[in-house]
Amino acid sequence: MRKILCDQVQIGEIDIAAVEIELDTRDEIPQLLRGLQHLYKTASLRNRIFNILWQLIPDDVEIDTGRSGMDLWKIFVLGTLRLCCNWDYDKLQEIANNHVTLRQMLGHGLLDMNTRYPRQTLNDNLRWFTPEILDSINRIVVGAGHRVLGMAADRPLHARCDSFVVETDVHFPTDVNLLWDAVRKVLTLTHRFSDELGIPGFRQTPHHLRSVKRQFRIVQKLREKDKGKNTKSPECRAATKVYIDIVHQLLDRAAETIPFFMKGGIRYEVVAEEIDRFIGHGKTLIDQIRRRSFKGEKIPHDEKIFSLFEPHTEWISKGKAGVSQELGLRVCILECSSGFVLHHMVMEQETDDQVAVPIIKEAKIRFSNLKSCSFDKGFHSPENQEKIGALLDFAVLPRKGKLTKERQYHESCEEFMALRRKHAAVESGLNALENHGLDRVLDRGVDAFKRYVALAVVARNIQLLGRKLQKKELERIQALHGIRKAA
Image (cartoon, rainbow, N blue to C red; front, side, top):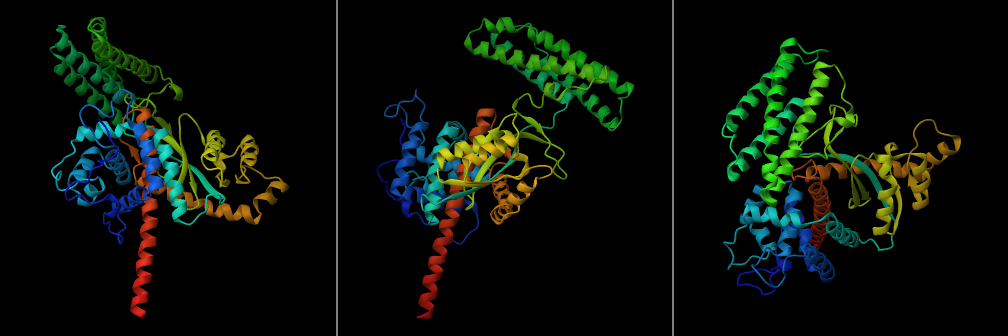
C-alpha cells in the first residue's frame, strides 16, 4: 500500500507549510528544505508534483492494499537530500532519524517520534526514480524558480552549455588488478553456490584466493619497480607468467560448474551467467597480458577494459592541468542565465560536438522560450553551426581555426562578445553540481548512473530555488526592520 503523504494530521505534527526553517544560513540543508517547502505550499506546484510522484509506483505494486510502504513525499525529500549533500545511505539514515527539522518536513509528529528508517529501506525506495520522472519534476522546479525571480513565462531565455566528467566508483584499472577482480568474483560465486548445490571440489577456495592474491601482489610490486622502463625485467615477466597460469587453471575449473548451475533452477541460471561473464573477462585479460607483456603488442583503446563492475566507464582525457585522465562518463548541461539547469544529457561514447544539436532540440521542447545559447569551441562543427543557427535566434558557437572576414565580423559584434563573456559563469554551475553529488556516482550500473545524475540536477535546482527564496525573505525582513528602526 502506498500514498503520497498521510492525510490525517497526527497529534504534535506540524503542517509542512508551517515548518520554521532557518533563513540566515549558507548550509545546503535549510536551502533545500525551503525549496521543497515552497513546492509543497504552492497548491498548483504540489498537485503537479504529486501526480508525477504516483508514477514511481511499479505496476506490480498495489496502491490500496498490502503492507504500508514509504510515503512518496518522503522518498522525494530524502532522495533530493542525499544528492544535494552528496551523502551515502549510511549518512542519510543517520540524518533522517535524528534531524528535527527534516523529520517535520517528512510529516512526522509526536506519535511517530520513534519511527526509524532502516538503511535497506532507503536503498530500496530511492531506486524507484527514473530519469523521465525526474525530468518532468525538473521542469516544474525550473518554472517555479523563474516565477520567484519575477520572470514572465514567455520571457526569452538565454542558456549556457558545457560538459564535464562525472566519475564512476571504480579503482584505477590495470590488466593485472582487473584480472584479480575477475578471478576473485568467479571463485567467490562458485564456492558459495557450489556448497548450496552440493558440488564437490571447491572446499579449498579460500586458500586459492590467498594464493592468487599473493602472486598478484608480487607482480604488482615488480611492475612498480619497472615503472618508466620500456621493457619489463625478466623477474617481472616470470612472475606475471606464474600469475596468469594460476588464474587460467582456476577459471577452467570454475567453468566446469556452469552446466550444474544451469540445471539448478532460475536462481542458479542467473549465477551461472554471472560466473560465465567474469570468466570471459578473465580470459580476455589473460590474452591481453600475454600480448602486451610477452609479445610487445600495444592493446588498441577500444579493446581495453576499464572496470568489470561498471562496464560503461570510459577513459577520458580532457587535457586539464594536473588531471591526466578521468574514469566515468561525460555529462552535458544546459544552464539558464539565472543558474537553473534546464536540461542535461549523459554522453555514452559521445563528444561535445555530437550532442550540441540534440540537447538544444530537447531543451526547446521543454522550454519553447529558449532563444539563445552560448557554447565553447569544443561544440563546433560546420553542421552544428547551421543546425543550431536554425534552432535558436542567436547562437554563440565560436569556430575553430582561422576565421573568414565575415565570421570575424560576426564574432566581434557586441551581442556575441557580451554573451561569450557571460559563458564562463557555467563553470560555477558545473562546480556546484560536482560539490552537490556529481563528483562521483556511488550507485552501480549505467541506469543507476543516469538516475543519479538526474536526481542531482533536480536537487541542485530545488536548493537554488530555496536559496533565492531565503534571500528574498531576508531582504523583506531587513527592510521591515529598517522601517521600524527609522520610525
